[in-house]
Amino acid sequence: MGQNPYRYGGPRGNDGRPAWWTGVVYQIYPRSFADSTGNGIGDLEGIRQKLPYLSEVLGVDAIWLSPFYPSPQKDFGYDVADYVNVASEYGTLEDFDRLVKDFHAAGIRVIVDYVPNHSSDQHPWFIESASSRDNDKRDWYVWADPKSDGSEPNNWLSVFGGRAWEWHEPTGQYYLHTFLKEQPDLNWRNPDVEAAMFDVLRFWMDRGVDGFRIDVAHYLVKDPEMRDNPLADPNAPSDHYKPMGEFGTLDHLYSKAHEDIHPLYRRLRAVTDEYEDRYTIGEAHIFDWEEWATYFGANLDEMHQPFNFALLNRASDPASVRAVVAAQERVLPDGAWPNYVIGNHDEPRLAKRYGVDSIRRLAVLLLTVRGTATMYYGDELGMLEGSSDLDLDPWGQNLEGVSRDGCRTPMQWTAEGGFSSSPKTWLPMGPDLENRNVEAQLADPGSVLNLYRRLLAVRRSSEALSVGDQRDLPSGNDDVLMYERVTADERVIVCVNFGRDSVAVAVSGDVLVSTDFRDGRADGSWTIEPHGAVVVRT
Ligand code: GLC
Image 1: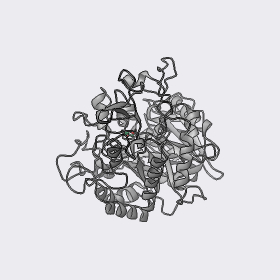
Image 2: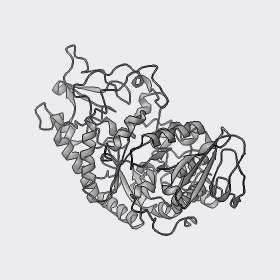
Image 3: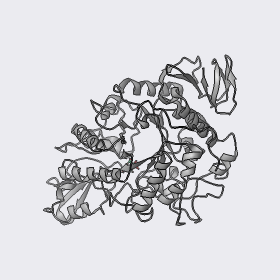
Image 4: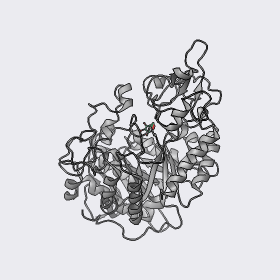
């Protein structure tokens, strides 16, 4: 595979800033990236073999691996049966060590998923906990007596549908499961749970892991009195919130994010700070910006970043994007750094959310706004939403229309697939394999993949794009988003056309990136293709 011709050669001069500030993180869903054994399921060795692609062809700074731990796979690995091992279908701990060693040698950091809210019901901790009421580990999970009529202890609902409580006949109590009944919630109010789960962090950091993506980070601590959740206010601003079936009927005030969560994250941060230069980013679907920002910690002593998910659903027009950028910048504590993400393993592919035309402009947006960028595997090819006919996603099975299978189809390496030697892959390959694959797009100078490569290289070599301040600029056109990124020595202007027509923008300078790959200079005016974008150094 050819080297990214635009790749910046030397180490990045970060001026003492943490690497994750300027870095681009590439999310890998291990089941779907590369299958080295021919069983139709991706694995760690497959990922390791793709290092040249990630390092030289793309040039990302870090990978984040979704769970690869032993698991009954009820929620495709987010039901962990052993936090300190590798599922045999994905390889061994030795494979993991080899992966880390090779990625580190190439200057790429490795972030792993940490799933602290719940384990699998097959985790030995839960098996013990369920074995009797007086077992030592009984209190490691959240058990509660029924109400006098035998019903659930309160009205809490599961994100995946139905009640959040499962009756356990042998011991005559209910246990809490915020997700599937096969994913019982750990009791983080028990110091033994905290100690054991903090040791999990140390285990992976000892193996060289550079950071953690914390699954449903804001769910860990619940109301100690376990009060009923109030009904959702139908008039509440619903900018970002997608009411999902029955779950949308309640305001989940008491079943997550109790204020005790902040001291917990301070203690967790102290653990990752025992090691040098580690990074934590929490999955916190919180759409009140002030509350969201509290997860940085009052003294920047909690997680390094709570994920900012706003562009997953609010990148459809310039006004909405401006509002998101402004909101994040407004609440960001001093010394904290913003972040953006436009796709992940829980959301439909970009083309399904925003239309296939949006793919290029969103690439430019993600990689030029001020902040850490997390990209999702396959988005660099413009991979399309796959079929959900198999209906493997448990959420999709419970709720009409939400299947996550479509965004988890195997990575498209060649026109034949190139993901596995087996014709039967765990999910079928996605649509338009012929054009949306690495090999074809490398050969096409105007491809989405080459746009990503160029953007990654330009971002890496530009101080302004890496760390510069961002200011909104008036574009004079409702369809055009325009902003500048500036440092003392450099000014870069980004213009993104959300419209269906080509549009001339007033800008001068060297064209660093144009979605249609026209190079050269803009002298006072530059015409952007429909749905395109241009990045200019003035
Ligand atoms: C997070 C994960 C999702 C998983 C859920 C339960 O939202 O991103 O994939 O199903 O947590 O662990």
